[in-house]
Image (tube, rainbow, N blue to C red; front, side):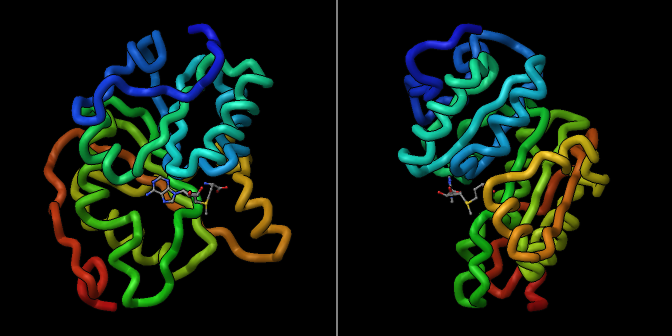
Length: 216
Ligand SMILES: C[S@@+](CC[C@H](N)C(=O)[O-])C[C@H]1O[C@@H](n2cnc3c(N)ncnc32)[C@H](O)[C@@H]1O
């Protein structure tokens, strides 16, 4: 893989699923960070793992450009960036079973009850995410918001394709930009990790506005 004038990938279609060989000019293990922000985590983690390929997904162009500059400065041959809405990417563009890990760090917690339906983590999203992961693929989540953490745990727990696992210490050690800030302010960070099982479908489209089980 070579570094061109930009790491930002512009797909020829936004309705056909991505072909990794076109995105990375290579096959292999693909990890995706949704909402990569300024990219502190992704740049460091991609630098530590040159044998894997990483896709940073962000809807704000300014943040994507910042990570683009950082990635090129660091000579990260294994990093590509995509400006798109994360839920759309997961539902419609990620190839089934084509992702080794999905990293979701500090998505907006939407703490007010009437806004819960705006949260990224929803049963239909988690079902699509589980289908994008290959068997043994991992979903990693971090938040400072205890309510969102409990919500995510319940939603993921309802997905029969996923089983809870530990976040590897090596991954946990790499902080995100928001995480560094939250820790400096003394806030507690909550993590989740799930592994994709071999079979069994998720319960899809249970996007209850009352919470994942209607219990909140
Ligand atoms: C709170 S920041 C966290 C950034 C980074 N993960 C970190 O921990 O430092 C959330 C980021 O996700 C992006 N974002 C929010 N919703 C998104 C969506 N639906 N699709 C793509 N990016 C999104 C925001 O623009 C923002 O950069």
